[in-house]
Image 1 (cartoon, chains in turn yellow, brown):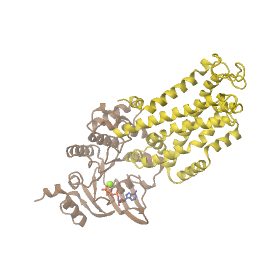
Image 2 (image 1 turned 120 degrees about the vertical axis):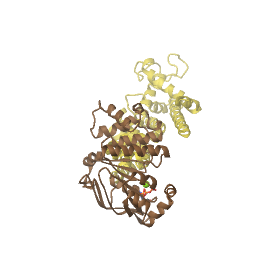
Image 3 (image 1 turned 90 degrees about the vertical axis):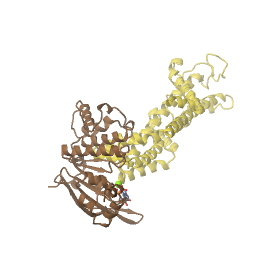
Image 4 (image 1 turned 30 degrees about the vertical axis):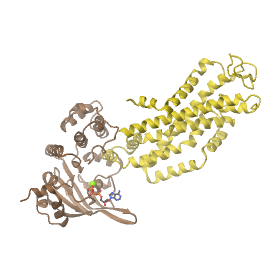
Length: 276
Length: 258
Ligand SMILES: Nc1ncnc2c1ncn2[C@@H]1O[C@H](COP(=O)(O)OP(=O)(O)OP(=O)(O)O)[C@@H](O)[C@H]1O
Ligand SMILES: [Mg+2]
């Protein structure tokens, strides 16, 4: 049975995949379905949902189309979530591999740096970084990655420590391979699976962090974000609660989808390992 | 001049406050084209000596001279270049290769690293190496876990001879193989030695195999050399206590005696 087959047999994987597929569809179709500027005024302010079918989810305080904002926000959430997680995984894997493989002073220094980053709560770090450098999409990605690379680094290091004692690493040294080639070509690929198992949690956390930063007004001001929409809606929470509820639901479903799909992948690979 | 001269080699490990001397003032030499066996009970320091000779671990004392130069003085790229002449075959042929590797990649690495053949030439070299160790050339694209244990050990030997070494360290290289395969691999090793004048440092706990393949033998006991000499003479009439115990414990040898 193929891996995809097994993956699709776990119910949480199916649910997660459907949610993620919807999110991707929203993100990819955003500029097709809503070609204009989602921040442009589209109708009367504070139109409730399901009243006017050209504006199905109504409008916000300034008369912007909520559905268009939701679609364009999916884009930001997905882009920031994936980019930040990828950056965190790459940096973590490289730092962890260098520390574990080199040992000695290099390991000591790299792990003290990792400790230092880990003692500061990730969100505070992101907050501080964006406040100092200024909000833009790239800065938000870096800010989130700053607080999340330590987990992958620790796991990669632990894995590398066990792998580097294996005969095949000694074999690579015996044939005269350069230590960096051994670390990154022979050891790192075999240390990746447990690191990648973290990726769903990291993507989910990154999406939430981005939303939280935007909610506090530290997101990229030129882009619609779900966190920003919730913050906008907060001022009229009593009269127009849907303005906060709609992006809130989108956020919850996205994080749930990422998490469930990740669980499904971990489960399928666990089954595969159990069988082999 | 000897190919390999080891003198006063010492390696200590500290475990829980106590120091254990895994190699204690070990001296020996290996001549070109010769097989020197290291035998001894489990934990006597055979693998430690192999790893020291290969510079996989560093000694606490002693000297290693290889091909007329101070081998311990080498470092970095000079050491990596010299490694072409001093190769190793491991006991467990599955553990000795990257689990993601293919047969071709395993053989390509040494050829590439030591600039032995151009990229275009390498597939032919790989095929020739496979044929030399008695394998079909079409095994090359297979993953390393898709071939049998005996085939894998042949690939390990092909990799070891790829760089035309003068000495190969074999740490229990035939111990994990079943008896018929073991015989074939030993024959292959003898052929290669005759053909290319490769010396072997042959580690084994099986005195039957040692008697059949080695010219000389060193018996180790707790990191020290207990006895050494002509392989047949030592195994037929051991003088040290550990030698007598090892011979008494080797069933195949006992049966051959009157
Ligand atoms: N990395 C290490 N740390 C601590 N002690 C070690 C280490 N490596 C080996 N030793 C100890 O050194 C001694 C010699 O070990 P070595 O592996 O050389 O024995 P061996 O003769 O190869 O045994 P075997 O026949 O079981 O392979 C043993 O007591 C072993 O426990
Ligand atoms: Mg051993």
